[in-house]
Picture 1 (cartoon, rainbow, N blue to C red):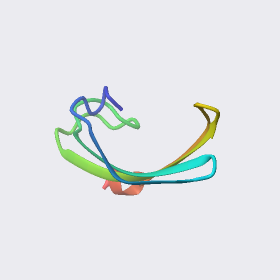
Picture 2: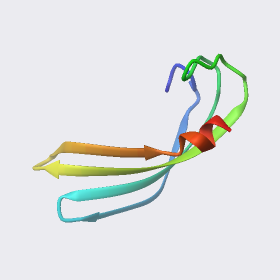
Picture 3: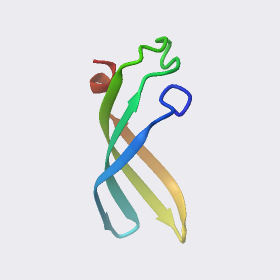
Length: 75
């Protein structure tokens, strides 16, 4: 991601947890300056959201599930 969008900004919109799980709603913004998913750089500003769920074991992340809005990004 950092090669394709070197100015990538990440904004945490919401964060909440229950038990050993934490869910984060995140917004990404950046400029498409390198190849991404076999699409050469366009120079366009892009933005997309993601829902990310982390399960902790002790003080470490044991599992990560990420659901980015790739369709929104590709548009």
